[in-house]
Length: 130
Image 1 (cartoon, one colour):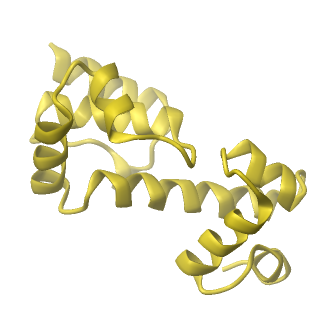
Image 2 (tube, rainbow, N blue to C red; image 1 turned 45 degrees about the horizontal axis):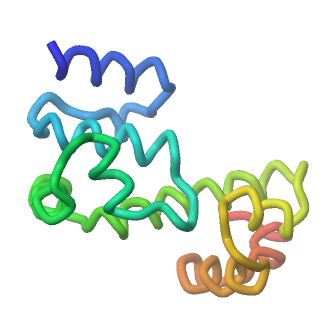
């Protein structure tokens, strides 16, 4: 029942076909992915995710990495940077507002994180989106 519910919820949230959560993932990994996708921000922690889904942080981290082939931290960071790029493409928010919206402590830290992930600054990305 939980798998059907979480897969259905994932579909209702508008996840694309490639991001859909297959039935083969454990319940805790499915719940963690959904929580991350609904709450991604710079300061999201493994402890917060684990507490929300009633799991041990160490076991959640282990299972997530084994099943997803990416650490929970890298997965959350990837989603965060994809969201940042999406917001930059829309041009309805300033770069500073995007940094704040995504929970970064400063625009400088956001810019450095964005450049580390994408290889260009947010300003450069906004001028020539990928």
